[in-house]
Picture 1 (cartoon, rainbow, N blue to C red):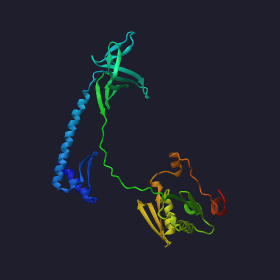
Picture 2: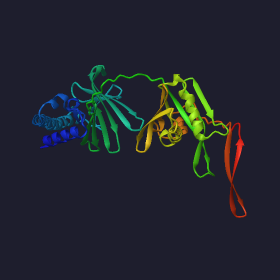
Picture 3: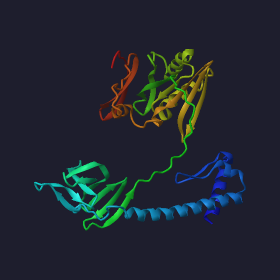
Picture 4: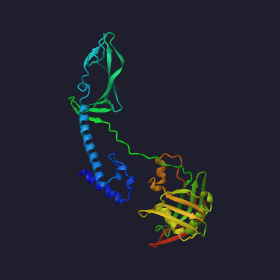
Length: 361
């Protein structure tokens, strides 16, 4: 029944998403269950294959259970952290180690780990009973770590958890999950990348309307900044800015990243360039946000991408998080700009607009 349910679900999704069944591999919990060759056979036969796989899975669970109990019945299981065997002393009654059997002796090295827990590193060796010295390399070794509930024994990539009464309460082994297949893909290093930014100021007496007064882009070894001219509208300025970029055929094929392109810069760019027949705009949308914007003029084409989709957060915080040596810079206001302010005159609010020429702020 499980195999039939799996088969129906697989076929349903192949049809739903219009998948080529000859390119499909089925993986469950990281282990391959069906290859693309299996999808060339009839549906009933696929069910038979799945039933075989289900049988293998149940069998593997049984084998795992048997393996678990074998792990519990390991050598030295009856040796506790408090009793490694009969003490072995030298002629001066100094402790050398512990006798485990007639041929096995335990050497104990005690220290405290970074968590200030007592650790005993145990090495099983042969002993020269005349010279009372350990011989050769260790036959086996493990680490005992004293804890508040008892101790942990680390042996052969397995952790054995004991309570204070030396009862084995848990066994933890490493599970090596098969890796999903990774196919090599052709990749090319794209050096034609850069950044783009627009700067705005509030208009309309501070009611939230913005106009672009400065813009710039940067590529390797080149940065260009532009400012609005007196008498020039925001839309005219944006058109001039992109004419300067796209009239340079060396920039053809470049990808420029603009932070928060989708919900800020693109609004001004599209609103200004959409009425200009010289430019061809191709936006890519997702959830009312522009992910990319392709702009073409004659034979030159650039792509704008939103870097906020790659790394969320403000530019200042991102630079700090990645410990970048460079800092966020600000545009210098070098042209005419409107400043709005309010004055309370005889219990009435008066708004004023003043045009300033500012060289540097």
